[in-house]
Image (cartoon, rainbow, N blue to C red; front, side):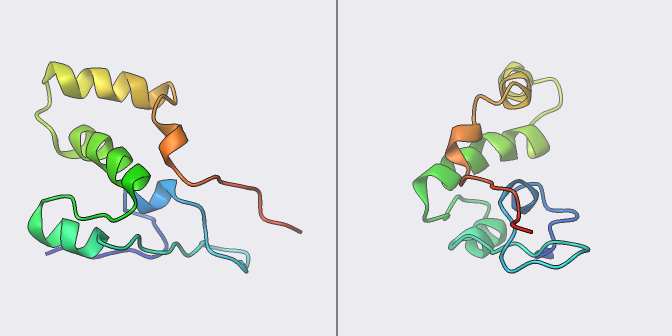
Length: 96
């Protein structure tokens, strides 16, 4: 069973996407990318946005891959260095 958390408190992909506007103080709601539900249901990437789909491939290796796999460890390093951030939609500060 998968619970899609629109507030992104426990979702590794949604927490990296920009929040929806208008926003209010507190938790920030995120839009679910088209194909994300199908991806979680099937285990196969169905995300329609190619950039988010590519980012999700790396992220799923980090959060679901074999613990000591060399590819996973290298992906963690690259993700922490921001090597995949260009695939995410631009995150801008909320306007006052």
